[in-house]
Length: 417
Ligand code: FAD
Ligand code: PYC
Image (cartoon, rainbow, N blue to C red; front, top):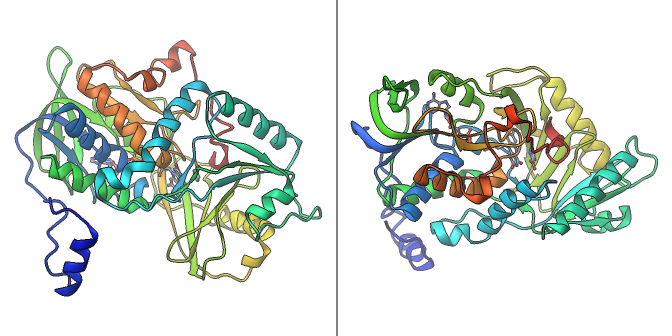
C-alpha cells in the first residue's frame, strides 16, 4: 500500500495528483473464505481489519449490498463519547475512546478525530439528577465526565442560550472533554483501505439473500446476488437489517428498526466550538470542518426500513435548536437524510456468538454505535477468531434477553429513543 505522508502529498501536488493508486480493489468473490462479514459499515470493515491485523486471518470477505460506508456509518452525526452508566458499557465505550486517539496513525488515514468536548444539557430536576448519577458512575470507572453550572456551560459554548425564560431552561450540563467527533466516511474508507491492504476482499454491490446451514445446523456460507460464497464463519454486522439477515439463518432477534434523521445547514465560519446534546428536547449539534451545522433528531415513532423519516421530527428538532441557540434561527438548512437504526430492548448492543455454529452477530447499536466503531470491531474480531468473547464484550450476549441480565442504557442513549 502506498503510505500517505507529507512527502507523498507534496510529490502528488507537483504532478496534478495523478499518481495516487486506488485505495482498495473491487475483486470478484472467491468460492470460499475463512470468514465472511456481512455489511461494509465501520464495524464490519473494522472487524475484517482486526481479524487480519491481530489474528492473522486474512482469507476474509466483507460483502456489502450497496457501497461501503453507505449505511449508518456514512449517515450519522459523528458524535463520540463514552459516558454510559454501567460497568460493562464503561469498559466497551472507553476501549473505543482510547482507540480513537491513535486510529489515524494506525490506519495511516486521517479520520479527523477531534476531541472538542461533548456537553449534555440538563433542563429539569430529573435531568440534573440523572446527569450527576452518570458523572459519579463514570468517575468510579475512570471515565471522564464533569458537572458544569449554566454559566460554565455558556463559557464552554458561547452560543448557548441560558436564559431562565426559555421553555426548557438550561440547569447545568455534563461535559466529557475527551468526547468529540470524527469524519465518518474516513473511518469506513480508512478501515477498507487498511483491510484490503492486508488481503481482505471488500465486495460491494453484493447483497446477502440467504444464509446456508449444513444438516447439523452449522453455517456453510451465504447466498448472495453474485452467487453462493462459502465460509467457515459468518459475522453479521448489518445494523438496521441485522434481524433480516439473522432471520435467514433462522435466528429471531430482539431488535426493532427505526428511521433516525439528521440534517446540515449551509456552511458558515467557525462559530460552534464543541458538541451539544439535549436528551429532553431531542436535539444535538456540532459544526463540521466544512462549516455546516450538523444537527440530529430523535427516532421516528414507527418502525420502518425507509431511509427517510417524518418531517415533523425534523421541525421539532429545529425548534429546539433555535431555542437553545437563537443565533442560528436564520440559518438555511441544506439537506436532510435518514438511516435505519437497530434498537434492542435495553439500548445496549449485541456483540456475540449465536446459537448457530459459526454464526456471530454485532448489532443493536441503535442510535449510538459510531462512537464505538474501533472498540466494537476490535472485540468482535477477537470473538470470531477465538469462538469466544473478549472480556470486554462478554456481557453483551443475545442470551441476556432470556436471562434478564440486561445492560439498561436507556438514559445514556436517550437522546434519540
Ligand atoms: P452500517 O454502517 O449501517 O453498516 C451496515 C451495512 O450492512 C450497510 O452498509 C448495509 O448496506 C449493509 N447491509 C444491510 N443488509 C445487507 C445485505 N442483505 N447484504 C449485504 N450488506 C447488507 N452513533 C454515534 O455514536 N454518534 C452519533 O452521532 C450518531 N448519530 C447518528 C445519526 C443518524 C442520523 C443515524 C442514522 C445514526 C447515528 N448513529 C450515531 C448511529 C451509528 O451511525 C450506527 O450505530 C453505526 O454507524 C453502525 O455502524 P455499522 O457498521 O454497524 O452499520
Ligand atoms: O449516541 O451520542 C450518541 C448520538 C448522538 C447522536 C445520535 N446518537
